[in-house]
Amino acid sequence: MRVLHADAQLAVVDKPVGLMVHDSALARGETDFAADRLRAQFGRPVFLVHRLDRATSGCLLLAFDRDTAGALGKAMMARSDDGMPEAAAVEKDYLAVCRGWPDEQFVIDHPLDGGPGKPLKKPAITRFARLATMELAVPSTGFATSRYALLRASPVTGRFRQIRRHLKHASHHLVGDSSHGDGRHNRTFRMLGVHRMPRAAVVGVATVALVAGAGGSTAYALATAATPHTGAIPSAGPAGAGGMRGPGGMRGASRPGGGFGSAQPSGAQSRTGTDGGFGGRGPGGGGGILGSPTPSAELTTLLTQDAGSYSWVAAAVGSNNAAGYQLATEAPVMAVGGFNGTDPAPTLAQFQALVAAKKIHYFVGGGTGMGGRGAPTDTGGSDDAAQISAWVQETFAPTTVGGTTVYDLTGAAS
Image: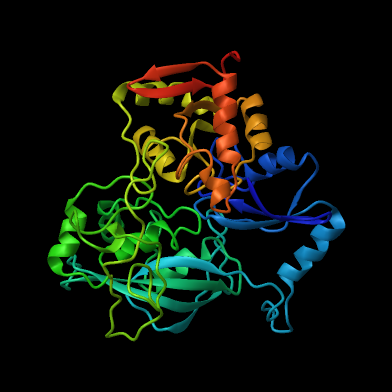
């Protein structure tokens, strides 16, 4: 896993969506856990200070010794005289997209049980701040449009699925939540190409999906929903329109262009400009910066064979490339180098260790994300993805399946 911070006593790692932190009664036959990965990754005992739900991505704090774990645990569990967590002892913030436009600041104080088999309800408090709003020209029950908001959620207590259940209690269901969300709004986002919120995904995938309809006309929004989209980021509007198809990068709230604006009053609406967003398909890799590959039936069949024996059925450079294969196979595919292949996640050494442990079955293609082998360092990013791609090509024999080059990482080295 990607290491965000590490020293002699503790580390912070980026837990991906879909990975359970540790074994429990809810595992249901699961064999892949973050705790096991981290012990192998660091080569030493690790002590988890807290947990994140399987469907939640974000920072996971761990310690390398019992004393540090105990001190951090006490800070996490610090309580005042009234039994509530002490202010500012440890603050945890989450980003979420919900249905509707709640107040700019609100608190949900609603007791929750401990989940299956734990019926006793305990105090549960979550503070929310509305960061941005938008409106889609898609009819909702009793309304001509659908409204959504980007929230910062700060749980004061730590109950089972607290944020998701609190938002459901307030009828501001979390978008993408199949357990406690609203199926109608989840389907709207699936029409836009967003099936689940990955990583701090409400800032990336979900943000762009929302921007697709922000302030656009009915025709613009309907064109977006009616057009098939691929990849980790759906583009907005009809072909040739502005917004995400224009030149330049992600624009902030102070300029015209895409992205969430600042929090707005209830009557206001975010707007999408014509000069913001990412450019078109980039060179290198199967799908470029915005597109993603659509694998052939032959390749999909190959990747799904014996899929249960591997943590990842395949690896591909860049999240958009990986997204195409993952959507087709409905199985985990590693995005080497993160979003555009310029992150050191994983490093070459980490990737080689995973291959040696038979965790990854195939490597698909030889692309290096944006601009080829030299681009990562030229833009200040990491060249680990390029190193991994080169190592695979030098070590394993290629084969072509459905027009795509594939390397079997479990086979004999070439």
